[in-house]
Length: 306
Image 1 (cartoon, helix red, strand yellow):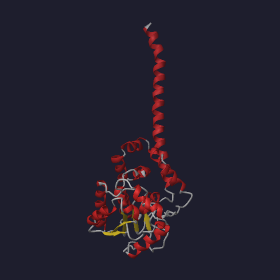
Image 2 (image 1 turned 120 degrees about the vertical axis):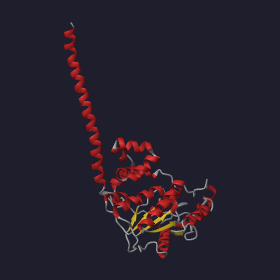
Image 3 (image 1 turned 90 degrees about the vertical axis):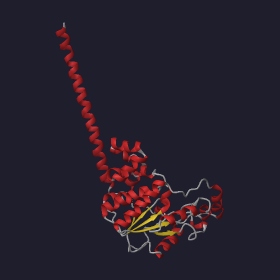
């Protein structure tokens, strides 16, 4: 009787062993397929005309690097002739902490640019834009560290599955720009006098308030520029006048002026562009306002590489 029981149990043990082996094989194929799929997708997206994709693909070398959030992304006319190649590393919503990571990545890949233009509104931004750029984290220990510190669930998700980093709308936008060029970044539309007047009434808590981690990142950018011999030019792009008065802007500007004593600092937040018709909202100008802003930057030598 015991012998019969032993014989009858052997097929079940063999079946269990085969099942375990198949499970291990499936897990290895899943793991390998994820890594291989992400690597292939990354190589395909290297052909995109998106500015960040070009930077990590190795095709973004230029004379002047522009950093900041949407108030740099939308306020520099990169098609305007300046005699120098401007590299646009500004991103909507980007914090100064993220800008510092992108600049260090740029210097590591291409060497020091001749100049950096940093729009300072990123000092008030949170770190959510790092989520958008997480597809580049495998190529950037700095972006990976930013994700791990501020968005650990997404960081570890990307460690478990490399394809997870591509599961967002930004990756689709980057893929779309393989087939089409980057669209114009300048905005259209015009505010009315009545809309400008309502900005004062609708203002909430002070918008212009630097976050500590971004101030530390600003100090790191200043130190990097000094160490690498980069001409650092900091600037505040124009703010709609009706909003500047109620958003904490004057105190914030004065704080930065004291903080940036050793760096070139241009305050165009108020005074340069004041007409409502040159803005589309409280923080962004239209293309006519941008033309005025670009002319002022050129007059100050901010678009010169020397």
